[in-house]
Length: 268
Ligand SMILES: Nc1ncnc2c1ncn2[C@@H]1O[C@H](COP(=O)(O)OP(=O)(O)OP(=O)(O)O)[C@@H](O)[C@H]1O
Ligand SMILES: [Mg+2]
Image (cartoon, rainbow, N blue to C red; front, side, top):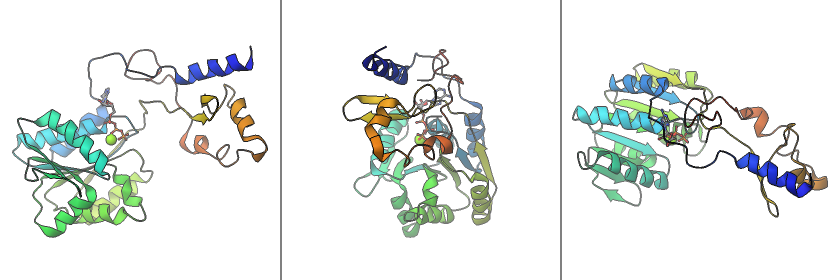
């Protein structure tokens, strides 16, 4: 096979399965059910589950449960852009039955609504300014706790949120979840339900964007650096990312361990 064909074939294999998955009935996963019922019981809950595993669903169901009890909820994210997206998603989900508001540094819309989407910084500032009025507080991307610059915002939000409110904390990347849960219990003075899901529903594949050849897999089928990538780096070598890079630390992509999204075994 010519080198050109080899590249085309490898690229096709690398990109296979991307696209809109086939429609299947929605079935909540066990970890989602456990998290929703812990939050609905008024517990602080820390959910650590991989990217794309459906943590938003937990937040939406939990918010829904609080709204049905006539209680208010706030959903915080670390970014204005993410807050805007969640604002649109939650409006679609809850309006017109319940009003949805937005509170970021740039935009303030219906801040007395039943559900408010806020950036975590602004939520923290509100806690200093006024008495907390939310019974459910969702802290998305809570691993920002470990951020050297912004971490204190999450710490203060957790510490200042009244104990009577329930915290639902979501993250895909906390490695010391038990330690964090212990800390949460000590500062909040109430139990924290820890829910860890390890299964990755969306497969990770490592690729390389070659300036001339386009998208390539980073490695060949033997696990060696893909030849065109190796050639690109030439003598300079690739030790900065290969060998001690992503794969060893984060684990190889898990193929064929699908549980949902189509029946092909390869996740989309
Ligand atoms: N039980 C389920 N079965 C199938 N699809 C699901 C399930 N739960 C959620 N999803 C879908 O999975 C996709 C990703 O979900 P979501 O955005 O909530 O991921 P996430 O866990 O928040 O990821 P991230 O860590 O990247 O923020 C969404 O399209 C959602 O509809
Ligand atoms: Mg998410």
